Length: 150
Image 1 (cartoon, one colour):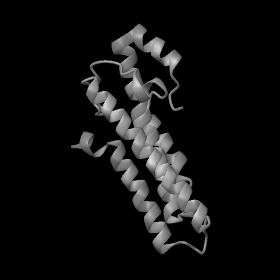
Image 2 (cartoon, one colour):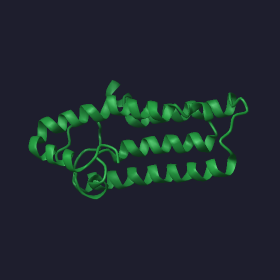
Image 3 (cartoon, helix red, strand yellow):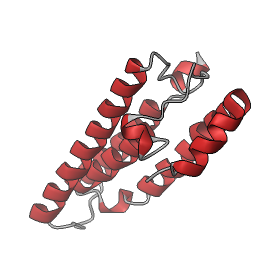
């Protein structure tokens, strides 16, 4: 049960819920400014969703798992994975940042680096360690060629 609760979308949903709650109940009159924040927030959310869709498409095309606690059957190096080793997690961060802006949840801006930290510690580092043990030299070459985030 814990493996199904400890997933990146659950952490993202928690951050979104906190940002929404802060914006609706505890705004304290703080604001990013309506027009600019809505536009940039929309771009970030759209970019995050697009990254996630491109990554899932590429992983499905390569017939490997998208589940973070499982070891993939191969290293996906094509498509969006030629630019970022973690496009789904990057998408999570972009979505939270965008919704913090859209909700005008100024006090929740620190949630963005907190989510990034949680994703890296709970998912990215363990995944990369499994990949390193499983694929050895192939992973070492990929790791040298493609950055973790951008």
